[in-house]
Image 1 (cartoon, rainbow, N blue to C red):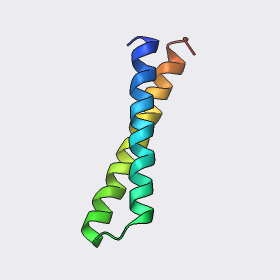
Image 2: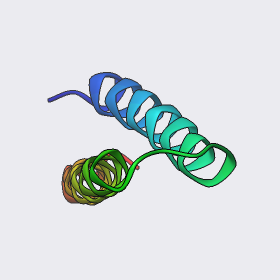
Image 3: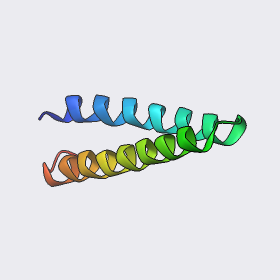
Image 4: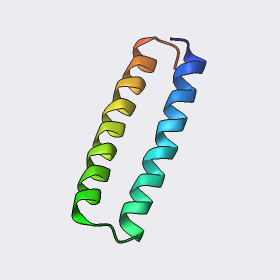
Length: 61
């Protein structure tokens, strides 16, 4: 993947992660929804790490 594509993916995932964390912290949700959101946040963080590592390993940082 090109540096530009990786940067776009990272930016979108960061925005999604921030929005999810804010929603989780600022609103009431039933337990099952909170668990699903926490799982999604975990998945997003893992994906961000992967794409960030891909960007670093591509040598185009």
